[in-house]
Length: 242
Image (cartoon, rainbow, N blue to C red):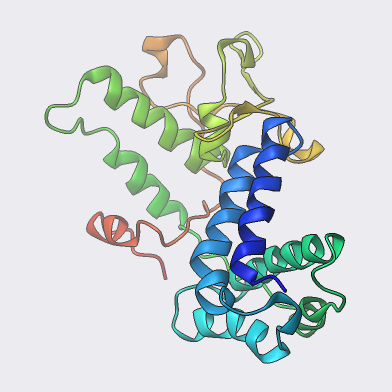
């Protein structure tokens, strides 16, 4: 009878093989490994896979949520990874039951955390802050930061979409950005996850756009979304989210 930790190592080898032959993105594989090593295996790694109990599996969800380590929806995603491990074990004859499925049924309906958004005035303050070139920064680096912040705050582009822009994606004559790719440090240039990710967008450019022959930036019409990852930095700029 195999322990969960041993099965997890075999499962990760299977995942790596799928990355090598192109069936799985490297970034996704890294997320699976992180979920197993940081959340799942510390709690059930020594247990015989076929003897896992409902309470043990549920603890993999409840403990990280209770301690504030993970948000509920993120913790549920970890259980989804555990289900993948369960299915792998069943396929190779190490398990007959589906205890993880029962837990996931109980976790249905978990909602995303309410998105906090900048107000228009906060967006303007953020854009204004990018006009200051940090000490020891080259002008080109400072300009690049301004472009990234403007495209994110006004156009709503994700960082990967901004990093994935190429010269051929920018139509200066029509004033359009063509979003066709995303960039990941793990997978490089890749296509969008869904068809909706392929889109055209009128670009929003900073005030110095005339110097670069680009269209002028329009005023932001909608509040920009933001996460709390850099909350302390934003607070220092007077941009604390409500």
